[in-house]
Amino acid sequence: MDPATLPRIDPDTLRADFPALSTHVYDTTVAYLDNAATAQKPRAVIDRISRYYESENANVHRGVHAMSQVATNAYEGARAGIGAFLGVDDVGEIVFTRGTTEAINLVASSWGRLHLHPGANVVVTEMEHHSNIVPWQLICQETGASLRVVRVTDEGEIDYEDYERALAEGAALVSIVHVSNTLGTINPVERMIDDAHGLGVPVLVDGAQAVPHGPVDVKALGCDFYCFSSHKLFGPTGFGVLYGRRELLESMPPWQGGGDMIEEVDFDGTTYNHLPHKFEAGTPHIAGAIGLAAAIAYVRGVGFDTIQQVEADLLAYTVERLGDIGGIRFVGTARRKTSVVSFLVGETHPYDVGSILDRLGVAVRTGHHCTQPLMKRLGIPGTVRASMSFYNTRGDIDRLAEGVERAAAMLS
Ligand code: PLP
Image 1 (cartoon, protein in one colour):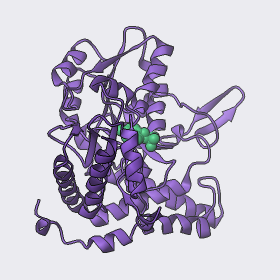
Image 2: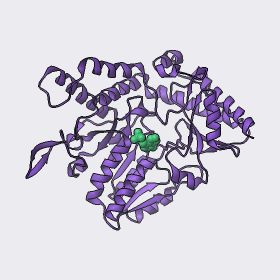
Image 3: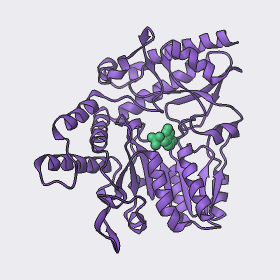
Image 4: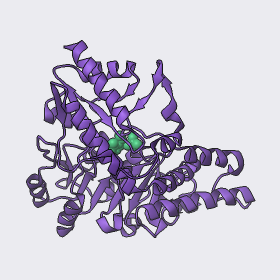
């Protein structure tokens, strides 16, 4: 893409919104290319969280005093904003969690205990993050159900015929990743949901790597559950969201007990709060919700059109620059991808390349990226992964390419 056609945002102004992008590592400014692990936070988010702790801090829901009401309004207002971001009007369908991992554990534990039994299959794919594998393994061990793992092609796409076979064999639930954190592959979740629903099978979508890169409307998708983590969407860590269709959430038992999730407690029995509070035991991460809502407002301000245009340019430029270096093997060449580039440099170990890049101030991730089964499927120990966000520049990619070239020369 010709940089002249890029949207009219001033990259320097935009980068100035993210203080951590000015961090010095060793003797240089960091080139932060580890956004799939966690994204940097704009000043607007940092300030909003500080304001909450400086002048609004109080526990939510239970207080009659003014500060508690301010905190409750901010917290529940955040839920409405987060719901709107996902295309959801009914705030009862927006459950707050500690992140994607906890959201999947919630569904596995609550929905799974209700519906799984010997002979029932949970369908996942070879490209799942560990957090969309292990919770299902745990509940399968408990209930006698099985995992049915759909194959991934050498290019890093779902083998759709195998998916259709998995559905035909009988599935209790499909749990799939929207965008692969290791490969960047954007999966055809609309089609996968339609095909599963055609057989009456509910679908959970792990959207951890999707929401930072494009708009997601869960109602248009039609999925039954959708989850993501705040920290990959420029919000605080330790916070995340589970969307669930009301009908399903209503039918599911609570998964953790404690304050706030109850209506009435008696030693003879307890009745539970209405949605979404039935699934939110204990004092929540109030600043997390408020911070995520601020992050979403920031993202909306930049706009997904701009984000997608900038990231498409960075993806193409990364592939071009790295492709010019001899001996690079790209891992994950799906037709539809986000701005994630995984690669290997000749016979070198990803860790060695990552360490050399680190000394040059280029932050990338190396290893299995919490997708060990995918690494086994591809027959590799891990990859070097550069994951770009809209605040990265071609200059960051130039530093990456120069570093990789140097690493290739040093390690060969
Ligand atoms: N799913 C995917 C695709 C991810 O990339 C990640 C994190 O890297 C997770 C799930 C887990 O997210 P968290 O650790 O924020 O719960």
